[in-house]
Image (cartoon, rainbow, N blue to C red; front, side, top):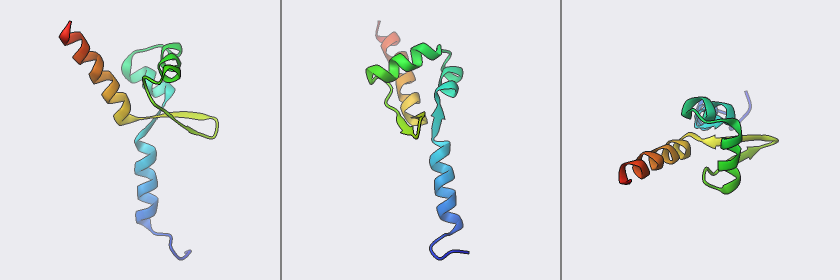
Length: 76
């Protein structure tokens, strides 16, 4: 075992990765098309992170975006 490596550090990495969802997961969970997801990303309406070539969205950001839609619909 290397010095400085602990189960807690690995757990934190796992927690961080669980907090990120793929574009496909985003589409499936919120019922939108892939092109809509990329459009939202490109407009900055749903901020994202890049990990290599992969695009990931923070789950909390996706939930906030979805909630903003519900709030907007309630105000109409």
